[in-house]
Length: 270
Image 1 (cartoon, one colour):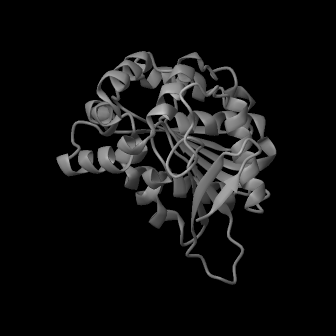
Image 2: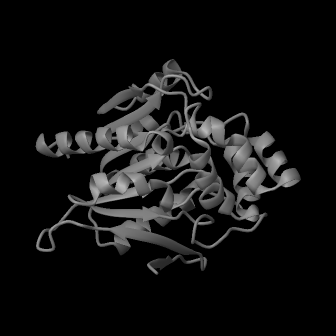
Image 3: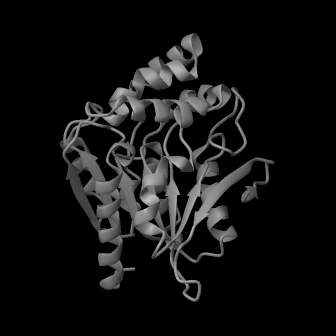
């Protein structure tokens, strides 16, 4: 099982999907998942990328098969970004195409601002630039009813009004519901204080932001307010009411991301 051990002893699990020609030297796409997820959340994206890129799906510390974090863990954005930078070095990459969704998109934005030399292109799928107001209520529900109940209670908003019962069950039982309680307890106490709205102006990489027409968490105008501060950025608005577009609409999102990266590469905007 591919693991990277960090200085504090935390193990980061990652998965590599690479179906490129074995004699080629493919560029690397690094996927960063959101809250209460793992690299498995990107499974529907892999077929669109793995024939032409080396695909790396990381489980952030605390999540998936990486080391759980304790309930009193002091989360720090700088440490999360250092984990990603160390993984890129571990993989032997000079730069990566970085793709993040939800809070993983927030990390991707901040990473591109702080580590511009490591990011070739950037894709953020419904990334917030500030902590969601609902987070304290989520934590209260988790501590009173458990992780599985919270995952099921919030899944409709994540995946939208057209999601099937089978899809809800898969996300609840295989993704969100498997998140360690202690990781969520510490993580959700940290998230409300996050605000990277002013940091995005530092991003130099060509950037694609994907959002939806009616997620309920944020308006299109509120996304435009910070997206337009990114010099080389594009905004694509997808029809739909899910606030986890990467999971709810993987085909549309992945196709837009593949097209964007190919256009950047063909224009030599690197």
